[in-house]
Image: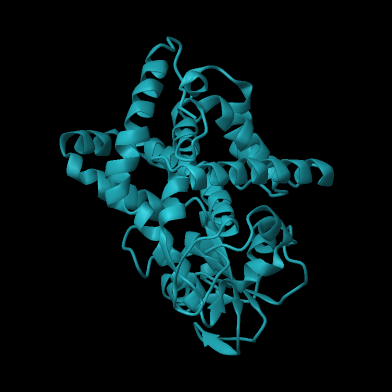
Length: 355
């Protein structure tokens, strides 16, 4: 399928639905917090690790995503958060296997894998997602033409434009779906199904139907590429070298590609749009820094990295304690869940002088 830009710039009410943070939070059964950092700072004063469900501590609403209850602890400093993320054999991503919404909508991917399995799959997929690939293949084939069309559309809006829906939401969503061979018109329908498949507000029947649609679209595309390769992401995943559990050369299966694709399509159209908005908001709110960036383009990479620290889109990850341990002077029993708080770690005054 050739990429079409017809839906890229046209008005469609679904864009506002898809890229509204408030509506996204509601669809996942969450609670909006305008500024969580004062609360995180107050929690950090209690210690580097505290026994608490971070969702309950911040909102008064306990985390109910897991299939069974666990004692919960929260990391609140850079040091303890870093240790929890680095030692995946002790604080494991296997936690996600107890989250039905994740396993049903995404499946078993590098997000839920640990150890050798994670390394084997990551080494197969990562070469397609490097900075070099982003600045070359991705940029030339999709990003640059899409940016040109979107900026042209914004300039035609004489009364101003909402950059969230006119740029930040559209660019990553259409880039990642185009990489899978979907046209811009198909991308909106596909994204709608992808979000519905995970929505807490949708009925079980609607979630199942949406999940089935996502699966069928991707499996049909995979089958087509196995018959005739194209210059797109599915073909590259099919051709990617892979080492199986016995150490033998192999290739990714249809189910492997399907699971990774759901993860990438969800994150590529979600996390990326929020981080773009955060960076643009920060620069427009600090015009001196914006002018510095315009004058010295080499500041772009540090600016992007600083936005990731200053306001990360996913402030909390979760890990399962695989054995008894001590973290930040606190005893963590086997089977406990760690709410690993990047949001608190990235504003830790013990790590940064002006967080």
